[in-house]
Length: 112
Image 1 (cartoon, rainbow, N blue to C red):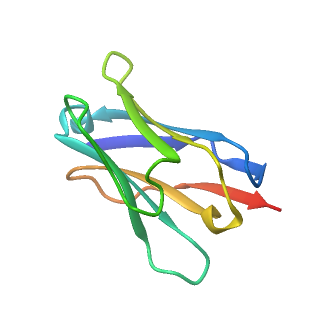
Image 2 (image 1 turned 180 degrees about the vertical axis):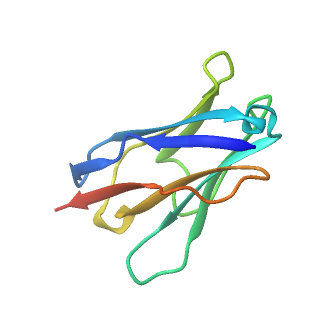
């Protein structure tokens, strides 16, 4: 069973930075890739970043150049470092290993 826990959300002012973590366990440890998604109020869930087992990363245009995804396989953890945040980045952020079901996510709120 794929298991994971997202953490690190919170409130930040526009222009600030925030880091999210996703600790995986169970079958999620061997997932070939892990994605981050987000869902803003009143909007559909949006894919924002993906990292493969060996570290190859991809980003949505909306976050490219501002967000960085990385992983520490020794700690079974995937990170999402977010910078130059704007109020439009306010959303619930979800980690999703390949083959897993949605978790609860972690709230990120960016204020002016």
